[in-house]
Image 1 (spheres, rainbow, N blue to C red):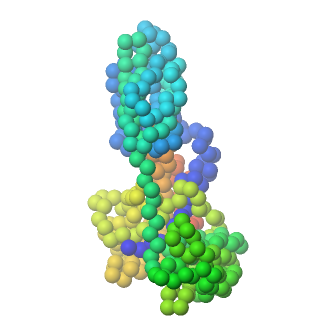
Image 2: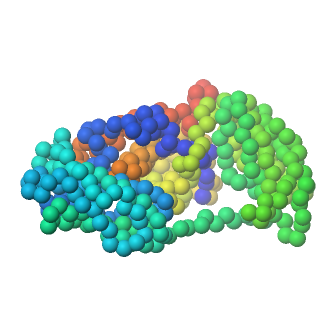
Image 3: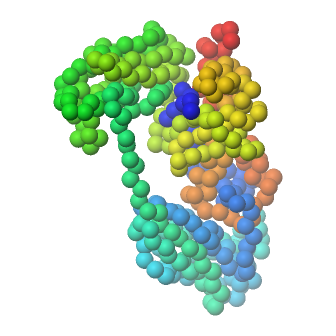
Length: 372
């Protein structure tokens, strides 16, 4: 497995910012409400809740939609009563007022919010207009504690980093040697390129009781745009290395993810999300990719060539667009009225907003001027 030097890139947040934030419209018409992982959902009966089944995290607030045929609204009124069977969520309103939709004159709609409370619980939310009812199942995820494994010896928190040109970033170094108290012990720091400069050549270790190891901060400055190098840490016979790339933008944040080339076959797909969307896995066995990467036994030597980086930028842009649509779906809920052309149009808009950014990340101007 090979980790590319694009880890911890806050793609989703940055692309949303470029598009105008969470409140920016995504026409046509409210396409974010018309997309789902399983495609279109037709309205069932006179009254529906969309999503009819969903999973939320403890503390997460999710928006669901009410869809009602106008014939039902004319008979029973615009007020939809909401109740829940079971504990485990907070239903943040007891009623919804529906109004006619501009894109579907035969349907009225409204929204309501639920909040996850008790991990592992399953609750049935019911909506009713007169005698007509609809329901949705809401499950609250179990809490999963992220296990952090510290390998023996020296290791950096991440295998690779981006450092903004002209700025400083602190890399976290971890040390764990059985039976040794390393409090105050200094680590030697070096770089193999002038474009990535460690600001301290000696850094002291301090005990981190949460992680159960000793940690040190390694401040690194990006001196040359597009520069790539290794920060090397040494403690007696132990050595740790981290790859660093100097970039124009600092794109790290809460929605960050890591891109990894893997020697796996995903069928027709070139890439898939894994581990809760924290890793984007690129298939080295896909014929459109493998021919540029080279052999897995040689650690995919072609990954640093312009040919592959160009393809990678396109793949990342496509996958980020899909992920953005899903993020908005999770925030706003789905609509049963999916139009294939509208979804394609929205996907292309999101790809267009990010593809240039992806190319800049993987192929900075300084690198393009070099001979491949």
